[in-house]
Amino acid sequence: MRAQAAHDQVWRAQAAGDGTSMMVLPVGDPAMPFAELASEPVGLSEAGRRRWALAEQVCAALENPLPREMWHGEADVIGLRVLPARVDDDPAMQQPLLDAAEVVEQGGPGVLRVGSGAGGVVLRVHGPSWSLVVRVSPVVDAIVIFLDGVPGYGWRVEDDAESWELIEDAVTRVVTEAARYGWGGDRYTAPVAPVA
Image (cartoon, rainbow, N blue to C red; front, side):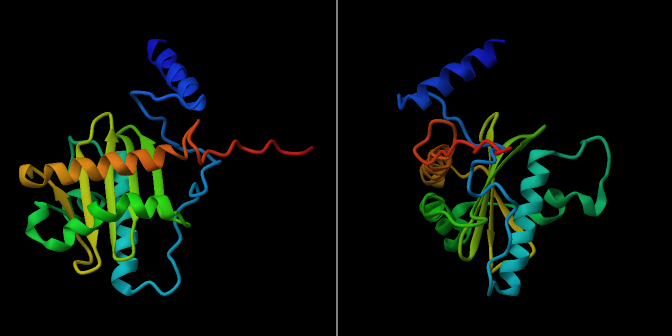
């Protein structure tokens, strides 16, 4: 009940335009313009199509993780297709972190996905030649970058103290942009009641 009361308090404050210590994200909100599953843009390269598909799979796997007690084989997309990395390992890995918030702000079909499940709240952003997947709740603990230049695999950013400021800033800015589509955000559109 306390969690519900806190959520209601934040929702009312955000809806009134007041600053809040939390942000309401548009999880499963049909009013969000990107609520439908992403469809590939026309003219996407083969590497781009593979990147989009893999980012969607990893996003879904983070939202609803497989049980840890057993071997899942090919179904374990994170275990098989996501490798540990640091942002300085490849300069191209910095681009998604630098551009993600701007891409979300500009919007467009399939650019942003905000999903949730037993694994928490996960944001997925598709850029022109990269994709970024971040689990943001209950804590930021998974940041996965996908690049057209490395189709078929994603890079999970881990133990990267040198780039932590860049990573933290990128995640904060993406969450802030996504919250603009949540209740009380300046881009929130209330669902239209069906006409009988």
